[in-house]
Amino acid sequence: MGGGPFGMANGNESSEGPAGPMAAVVATAGGIVAESPSSAVSTYIKLVLLGLIICISLVGNLVVSLLVLRDRALHKAPYYFLLDLCLADTIRSAICFPFVLVSIKNGSAWTYSVLSCKVVAFMAVLFCFHAAFMLFCISVTRYMAIAHHRFYSKRMTFWTCVAVVCMVWTLSVAMAFPPVFDVGTYKFIREEDQCIFEHRYFKANDTLGFMLMLLPCSSWPHMSST
Image 1 (tube, helix red, strand yellow):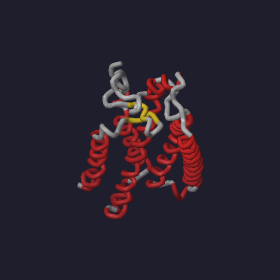
Image 2 (image 1 turned 120 degrees about the horizontal axis):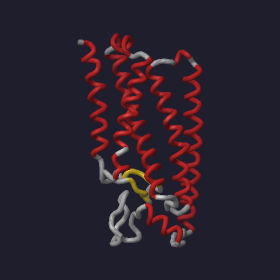
Image 3 (image 1 turned 90 degrees about the horizontal axis):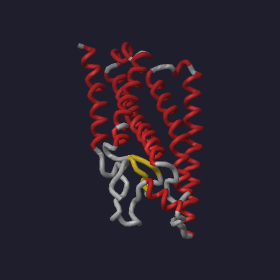
Image 4 (image 1 turned 180 degrees about the horizontal axis):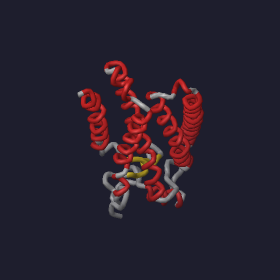
């Protein structure tokens, strides 16, 4: 087979190497995947640990979100960003991680369609970029609160926070969307038990995203103070 959408494996690749999503489905349907006792123990440990991570993530993020929403003293800039970050992480834990659990349970194989693999991978990458960009914005705003306190207290209003959140989501979508059209590749990576961007070979998007975020954040206080 030739390299189809989503970077599927070529026919001359070894069956022991990373297989594409369709290859994983075929392997599972044909009953080829078999686990040794040691791999069964490893699978069990992975399932337990990932289940704990999902539960802790859901409970922790929901508790923090409720605290920010209920306490009016926390209705200000850094906590708006924290609320957005917690809600996004809650969605990722509730939607993306269960597919990883199923993949681990099925012997590191993707048992759904190629389209669903792209959708799940897109969401996983979207939330990863969002978390990285939002943490970056929180760091920048903390610096501004200390180094440019007058500017920060005057300009960091509710609507400014909304604009920053919208900018983060827009840039995150822009960074995660190209592989949907096979610019780069979304595929099932068996070593990670998930459909994800093949980041081992494509790192230009990461650098570009942070540079695009750094430019407006660093120039904004200087442009507004003149």
